[in-house]
Length: 250
Ligand code: PGA
Image (cartoon, rainbow, N blue to C red; front, top):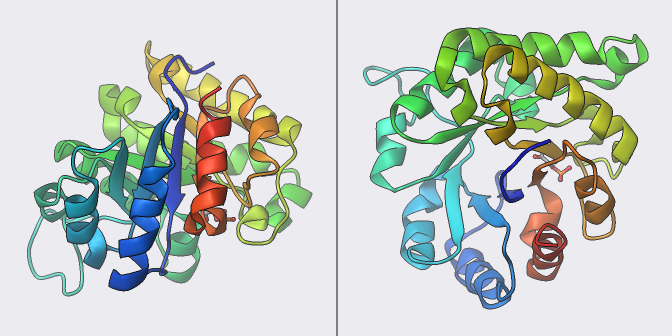
């Protein structure tokens, strides 16, 4: 069981605009009275300056959705961890299944990204999760363990500084959610794997992601090893996101 307060992170993906963000972020902030969980939004890199200016000093942190595996150099289009640090980001998602699927990110690349983030003082949110076919083939445990093992191997004793997000690929953006029992079963496997690597595994927040919404958040968050959520679609609507932050604050 994780020992810290719950952590709820919005993953805006490739959504937002200067105008939309300028109303969504204040709408979220204005409803955060009574929210005691940790909360963040991961926005497109081009909106980090805007997020920083609107959120500095508030209870809502901001983060990036990716970070380069390289430190600096001739990598056109990439954003380094040091650049993210310039905008005071607290979190960077790494290894989201959309990056693994559409941009060919391997376990080794994801592990390097986590390393770059940690070295810059940014908490990587390391995403793991099986596809529908892998679940049906009984490979769920072996897939998520392989994905996390690469990050543990590359990051040694710093591993207690990461956040893990279990996101079954079949649940992302589909409206299909893992049941609380299915989520807990995988979270327990990940917790045990972290325990074998660090004495501080209880400090690692293990988030659930995949069609989490205002209706199912409370039952998922009630599981002993579900320490929060990584929320896509439902994080783009202030009332929905706020109701999930409140569910995580109980
Ligand atoms: P979803 O996305 O909540 O829209 O399913 C979650 C994610 O991909 O992080």
